[in-house]
Image (cartoon, rainbow, N blue to C red; front, side):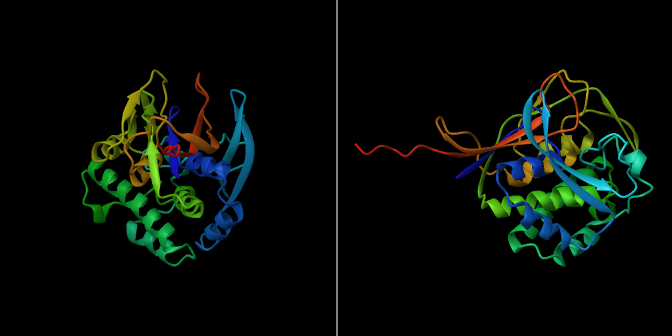
Length: 267
């Protein structure tokens, strides 16, 4: 059994959790695991939504300071445009703080290890982007509630589904610039560039004038990918759609598939 990430409209943390839930990850197991993190100040909304007529699952972390009439927020990352409007409410956590939250939770050992791996990929990317030693990096947005929930949520869902082998398509990204706490950043943002630089992920720049790949999304792929390419033939056992929050000319969705190579016929 192989999990295939089809990233033709980019990827973010919330889209990843949503797609894995749509694929069949157990919602109650996820919610119980998240509750055991012992962090508050948020609620989770899981709902059916559509993009361009394609229905899937949406996973939203609603922070207490957000109001229902505010624009929907996507995956919050150190380099994302949402940083400036939320930085006052977010705690600045370092890797030790985050690992303590994970270690003291009721996650399985496998899920804990995967969550740590994703966070450490982002740590290295941010340290390089800001020319700081890793022990001096504070995860402003990455350490915020919503990003912890997204990263741990992915780890829990992957563990629950029993996934061992992961294939990733070419990852589509936009172009232009995005506003963040440090000013106007080029797309892809530096942390995403650094993650792709140290991983074996393949990137394709599209003509969408927007950020399509967040650092969390890139780190999830870098942590999970361990099979280089799709089989020439395969059966689709199950598929899931994670609905994103941006509007492109193409559907802003992340599709995941559980696939299986056909059994070889005996001669």
